[in-house]
Length: 253
Length: 115
Image (cartoon, rainbow over the protein chains, first blue to last red):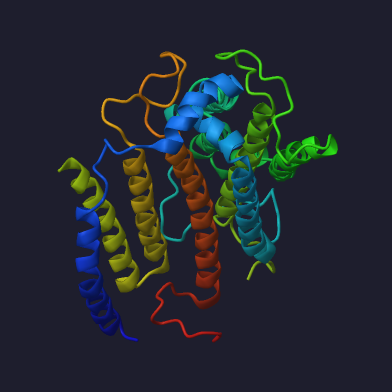
């Protein structure tokens, strides 16, 4: 099908769907004033029943904790897929030199960029850790904090270049963190079953509201997600940036 | 009126993303358009959970019982964003492999299973 024919089919489909879409938009519930029964129930019961103050974390790790397990394994599958597609095709050489595009000038980074990268990378990783730790009290959680931690490391790549960054990012540790996080989540779900309770029953003491260690089993689940997301996104960055290496003689494609 | 604007923006994001996918001549562009389509779901979910004069569903500074927006849809958006990012990474990895194999990113010029 030529692009032109595709566009014509698309316009035809749009012409059919548009009246229905307009009708739906006109008849949607009033914005901002319609009832939110599930959200209100969570807001009403969350702090009383589970002693946590962050309702989003409560939903993710308690109300629909089983969904998050599925999400966790989707993340694992996607990262595994990327690793197989990229690493499987080119092998693994942490010591390989960075590649240079022919015809593009190789400009040295200024000392200021390197210094900013070195100063801020640890600070941002620390901030990510803070966000993971405060999942139950203030906005944050394993997903957000894990991504912040993995992204903070990229500042080293921007400041010091590929070689130093690659030496710092140990794939064995990242792989292990990803796998450990996902299995910690699954194990925390299975632990109550050993005691004869349903999957993911919150068996640990809930603690005090506004306390860093409130939420019981949710803390374990949050730690699992933090490990898995930090490791998973770290692996993704390594796999994509390894594509920028010089292809060794006799290797690669 | 504001509400209708929100839903209309959702429909527009979905439509413009689909338009980009249909007319795309480059797989990287196509993956970007898919992200635009996905952005419409973020807006839809957050729009559903919004409530006028309500705070965040975090009861650290204000006591439980103060009006708050829906935390359920916010948790769903969180899931949506994480999965979206990893699926985008997976698609881009496929695009990279395709480019290495065929030297092209144009869906129109690549013939299936040809070398």
